[in-house]
Amino acid sequence: MDAVGTSELYCSDWQSLSINLDRCYRGPPQGRSGTFTGTVLTVCELLKGEVTMKKDGVEVVSRAGQGEWIVCMPGERYQHFSETSEIVSIHLAIRSAGNGAEWRGVPILRVMPGALARRALKRLRVCRSVRGLASSQRLEVRGQALPLQQAIEMQELASGFFRHLLDLIVPAGMHYAPPPIEDVRVRQSYRFLSALDVSQHFSRHGLAAAQGLSAAQLDRLWREELGLTPRQYRDRIRHIYACDQLRQRGSTIKVVAADLGFRHLSQFSNWFCTRQGESPRRYRSRPAGS
Image (cartoon, rainbow, N blue to C red; front, side, top):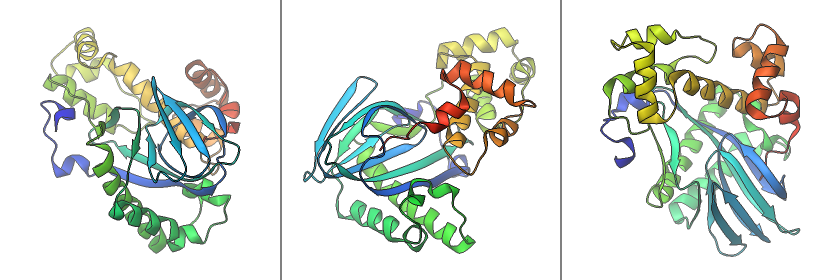
C-alpha cells in the first residue's frame, strides 16, 4: 500500500466506494481531435486506425491490431484519432467518499489485457442493460432508466471489469487511493471533508477545533501535506461534482446548482466559470472525447 503512506485501509474504508458505468460505446470516436476534459476513468481499445493521446506530459500512441487498451485518468487530455478510427470506449465513474481516494501516478497507460480482462469487458458490453440501449444512449448510460435488477447486474459487471483493470494498471504505476498523509489531524479532517455531502457547508474554524488546532494551523499542515487548504480541497470536490453532473443529460443546470447549495443560478454560473473558464452551458455542449 505504498500509495497510502502510513494510513492503513480497512474494508470499512471502502464501504462508500461506487463504481458506475458511464459509457459503453463502439464506433467512431466522438471527439476525433482536440483537448477534452474528462471526469471519469477512460478505457479505449482501438479497432481501426491509430491514435495519439497526451496527458500531463505523457504521450501514448496506439494502432489497431495491437490488442492493447489505453487507460486514462480523469482530467484534461489531448487526443488525435485518424480519420478511419473505430473504438470501443468504456468510461467508469469511480468515487470513494469515505476515504477521499483519488487517481494518482502515471496519468495515461497502454496495457495488454489478458483473457480474464477481455472476458470481463465482453460481459459488460453484452449485458442486457447495455444491449437494450440504442447506440446514442450508450454514450450516457448513467442517465438511462433501468429496473433495479438490471441496474444491480450492470453495477456488478462494471465492478468486475474494474477489478481486472486494476490488475493491469496498478503494476504499471496508476493507482486509486487516498493521498499519503502522515499527520493524523490532517488525515482525519481530510476524510471528514471527503465524506461531506456536496451541498453541505463546513466551518473552517470548527474543522480545526475538532483537531485541537486553530484554522491557520490546520491550513498550514494541509499545505505541507497536500499542497492546498481544506477550503481549496472542498472547492475542488464541488467543482469535480459539477463537471460530472453537467455531463449527465438527465440533470439540468438548475438541478446541479441546487445540489451544490446555490440559491441562484447566476451565482452557480459565476462560480463555475471562475474555476472552469467557461459557462456551465458551454461546458455541457462540448464533446466528451473518446
